[in-house]
Length: 523
Image (cartoon, rainbow, N blue to C red; front, side):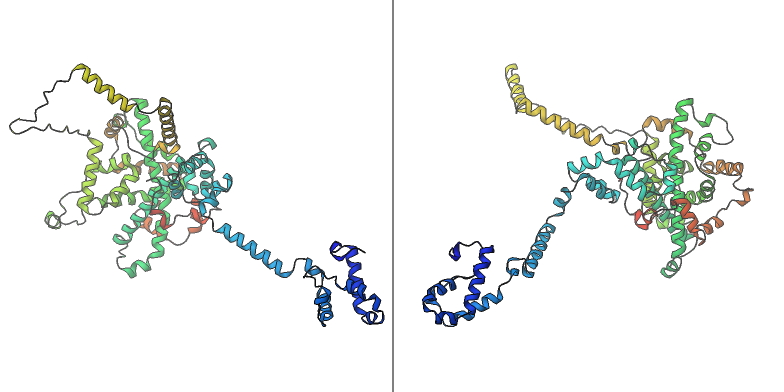
């Protein structure tokens, strides 16, 4: 039989030898009865399991058999199988690996994701954060610019109300860019901010809620009024924006404006109002006088008393003329109205209005800087040093050489990369500008003389169109002033209006929150 150390562990011969060893240990009397077999038994007893070190026969102690018996009893196949300790160790190592992965910075975890997941994550962010990410790096700028369509589509489905898409229909997939989305949000921001400002003025000056307790009690009515004004002001923004565009087209096509053409109803207003449904036209018509009167009240002195008290309080400027209001509404739009409204201090606000109106109606004056003259026209004398033609040529050559340092290939590559990056930045959809931007001097010259009267804007055409469509039976059925304000704060009908304005399955993010007035992602 082969020696024990040659036998393969856990083989068949291994277990046969193990069985022989156990039988020889179970019969110790045979070693005394047959002394000639003692060496063979001792030789076989030296075989042990390969889990400890083997001992020589002369090193064994009397109770060696008891230790061997304990070793044989403790032997099990569990020693070569995964135990609970090894499983816990594997779990602990896996948790350590996951913790080490979690310790990686967010930018590395984000960059390791596929592009599709990156776009889904970016599209779920607010629009102001998306525009800020474009300024973080060129790679993020390229990623957002090349994926404007899915980002815009996500926001249109989750954050843009239904009344906005009715007035500004969703373009084709090729035209679904960030410029369209940012334009919608710019108009929503202006409408939300003006609804807040008008609600504040109505609460304080009309409903006379001045103390903190009164405002707290009036808070539910205030919130309903603010929410109902947002879509109506958004429609008024659309009206003035579209009216200005169509007015310029009318002058360009006919060669003259409406001032030299007799009409009963303003044809441009008729064309714009034909885009509105009956319910929108009636609601906006009832609120339009409130918007215009609130704007005019903002630009008047805070006191209606005589000139003595106005001079005593420092209100030295009178209210603007009607043509100033008309120019602000028809040329600047509601965004310009909001800018005037937010200026604090009556004198400062009136100065801002006058400055803007002068910039629109008058050519900008260029001030030429005066030449400095010395005392009694004695200025610094020029150098009388004559430079020869050769010296001048040498100086020009040195300057040209300094300007032309570097290889021609390097300069061409840098110029090309700079130009391509510049084209890449300014070639995006956002380079088209914000809605109702500033007009050129030529457009202002043909538009300003043809503006309508303040009291004829919207009111005459809208009331005639409401009666023609049969939205109401009589002019007396149109709510004005007090009934229109009470209609804004009434409690019933809120769910039906939300379904009409925002859609049936509109998420909560579509409804106008108060935080929407804090920032405009365009500016």
